[in-house]
Every structure is written in structure tokens, then in C-alpha cells.
Length: 234
Image (cartoon, rainbow, N blue to C red):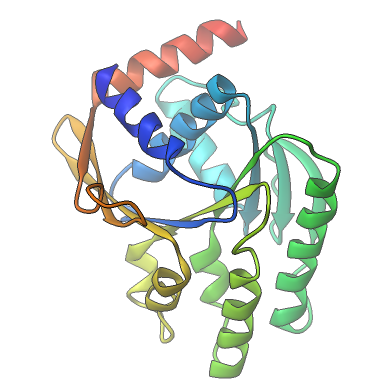
């Protein structure tokens, strides 16, 4: 569990108001394992985790985790749904994606801010499926309006926002959002698959000595965590 503690210590160095981008390819289970590790981290640190689920991406993560033997991984997590039809978690609000693209990004941010306004403790917001939402864009004007909306989360007094971005999707988009998101982000982490393990590599962080650090979390460590969480839910 030492490697998991190292990842948790890295998360401890994040401050409210930060935007984090985690890059991972869809050929790995990095997003699934990172999401479940983030859930455990939030529980241990007394923070609340809220998930923004764009275009039913959370359903895919949840089903992948079910195959690993952990059902309903996010059933107790508050979720804001942007588009999509499959309910995973405790859906607190839905935002449709009909009409102008900039409007639904504004709506989901406003919904999230209304929810967070009543909260006293620190909130971690995990956004999944943003790259699929970006795939709907065809105009530079729409693209940069959405980037501007995203960067408004910078400096929020009690919120850390983490975007999991599927690089297998972003690199095929006419307008790749990663360069702009990495510019906005205070922290950038890349998840890389390795036989029997997952590697988290820090590419950007405002702390001297942490940039380029790699954290290796073995599959047995993750499976033990899943078993622990499953026992708690039983």
C-alpha cells in the first residue's frame, strides 16, 4: 500500500482552486483505477467527491470496474449529468446538450456552483468525458468559449477540479483540447499502463521537486483496495 500512500500524499499537495488534468489512453484502465482511488482518498481525508458525467462516460467506467468484481462503484457519489441517459451514482442535476454548445457548459458550471455553495468542506470535482463533449465542436469560436468557461474554475475557494482526458480521443479531434487544458491546469499527470502496474507521471505541478516524479501502483495493490471497498459496502 506504500505506492497508494505516495499517490495520496501527492493529492494532499493540491490546493483549493487548482485545475488538474490527468491524461490516459483508452487502452488502459488508468481512468477507472484513478477514479476509485480518488473515491477512497476523499473518504480518508474527509472530503466530498462530486462527479461530472459527460455523455454517459461514468457508465463505461462503472461497468469496467464491475468486470473486476466491484459492482456499483459510484452508487453513493453525487453526479451532475451532462447529456447521456444512463444514471450512475446519485444524480443531483441533469444538463441537456441541445442548442448552442457554450450554453450547456455554462449551465453545468452554474449547477455545480449552486451545489457547492452550500458545502462547508473541501470538494473534489472529477470530470469524465470532456473529450467526447469537445468532439461535438467544429468551430474555433465554440472551442475557445468552452475553454474560457473551464478556466473560470481556477481559484475557486474550496474546490479542486480534476479532468480525466482520454488521449486516444483527443489526438484524433480537429481541435485538440489538451494543449489549452494543459496551459490552464496547475497540475498535469499522465497515466501509463505497464505490465502488472499503472504508472502516474507528474508533468506539471507548482512544487519544486515533484515535477517528473513517477508513482507506480501495482495491480495487487489496486485489487486489494477494491476488495476493501467491497467489504465496507457489504
